[in-house]
Length: 308
Length: 106
Image (cartoon, one colour):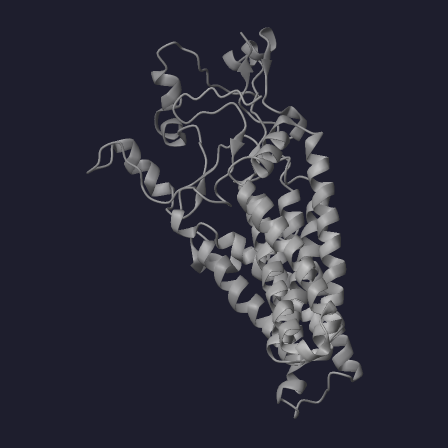
């Protein structure tokens, strides 16, 4: 299947991309793009969940900071010439990276303006429940939704890597982002004893973890029937070097165990409340790690199609 | 870089020279135009074309004359004639990138 004609550096067979994964020329930057995708998804998801469902401004602010500091720093450090980062803003007509950065900027600005009155800046001429506040939230929420899907579209836009060039990827990344937003909100709520938030978040987390499991199944099924490069990616995910991260980290530790822990937490009587909160917090942390592992696994199995 | 189906673009993380302590005259010219920290690709030794209308270095030194270089827009050029006469094809034409490199299929 993978016929290599390896004359020095020339490879006619399937080639593993390394620039966005691990093992490329710029070793010290390994993983930065993974962290940028992860922080972008988690932060956007947390903002949306915290403002729409659990109404918790501090948690939404943490989401904004994860995007601004985590994603922003990881992206800038990844660049070959960080001083030219501003050029990314000027290619939205062709580049998903450019679109992502523009929406990230919109998200951070409008999200901060929306949250500001609830975070001590009450002298501002709007509140979060006023018409202006709601308009600010709508823009920030739409930008956060875009941020949850754009890295999936970014990967899917590369036609030469079949395991990325799939319509499932944007959906998978969006579900993971939303789930991570819920997981981190649930963990922070459990650690700070916000019981009503924990119960609501844990219920949503269960639904989204099941959706994650279904999406992963569809993703794997779609890859099995396509090109040799996709089948190589699939084999690497299931039985190759990436399998411990994908099967062990993303599926077992990231989905199955959190589902069991949430079920156990919801079955425990109220007299063991601290134990239930601890289980929920651990489930949230594991779900977050699962998100990181799945993005890592997908980036690591990006095989280019064979040249001939 | 990631999107290129041919893997011809690469990130120039540092100046790579043939001799460890100095640049060759061609490398001197090349690194005046290339910038470390950016993505680059083969430009068919444009510095050789500009100065003396020489073909790319790889065409010049190929011991079996397996490479040809010329003007695809000129239907009478050697490369255009070869492409028309032989079984020449581009890699992955389905992607619509219309690469200027053709392979003669023997």
